[in-house]
Image (cartoon, rainbow, N blue to C red; front, side, top):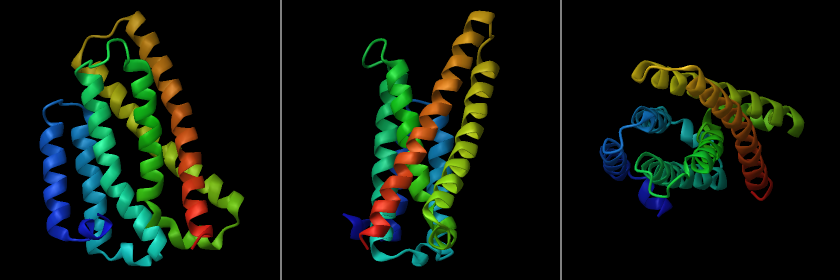
Length: 188
């Protein structure tokens, strides 16, 4: 499967199908999915992918393929309320998987830095980067909620606590992503 994802035509077809299906649940994943695949295309056509070792590249391609499927599935379950009252824990799982996925998918940008830093410096760098991206996503989510529906004090309290939980889960996901990359690099 990893070899299939190296083909540009398959990547274009896969990205199109994921984005088209995401339109059926219309959430912020539509925009984030477009950004996800745009980043992959930029890395592919600017040859940033070539900076990765074989094992790093395999991890990168696997993440590029598996994460959008997981994210689309989770978003669909949340938006369609497939499991009643499951929004809280499915949303945490969504943010966790997003943090892990983004940590791995951005590896071509910081792989040179990664190899030069000590492990703890790499950890601080990755946690900071992913938390920054996660916080921007949280501001985007909050903006969508406030703009789409009138907000009262009770909703604000729910949104605030959701933001705090999501930021915590982003931190845990970034740490797990760091460990996955670290173990992958060690074994290469």
